[in-house]
Length: 210
Image (cartoon, rainbow, N blue to C red; front, side, top):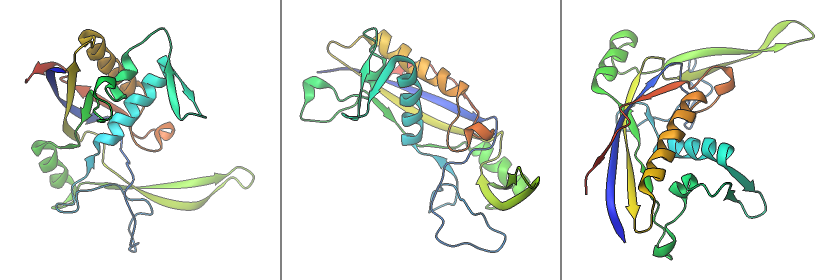
């Protein structure tokens, strides 16, 4: 039975450019080879909740779990409950209910205005040119143009944490908070090993809403 619902409203600041891939149906001259995901109604970039959830699950799994490739599942070490954030609540089977719900994060109004002030009306992204260096010839080859949300952009998002009978609320909260800290030490989106996707997440306090 559901005991309590907690909500975390947070701000996510980009400390380096962010690329979360979208679809490239048309290539325009001067455009990007690899575009980002955007709201089709407004053209504004957003961060899918699935991207945040998947990365937090990944960094927690790397620290506390082991992937079973045959079963496509993970097992917990040291009886940790952190990863149960992402598992269906057993007592509610066959209903698939997760304890943690990750909403899409959208640009704050201030960040939306600031980006357009610097980039032009209706523009929210930059195009970064990248080259592959041929180590034998010592020169750049195959230039690509990558669309990114620039560093300093700020998104606002929401995470809902549902607490059920038998859950250890403190452990679940601590697990989610640790996942956020580990995410800050890792990266979000693509090309993180090349400097993309460094973030800071602020205001991570929970409030009880039900």
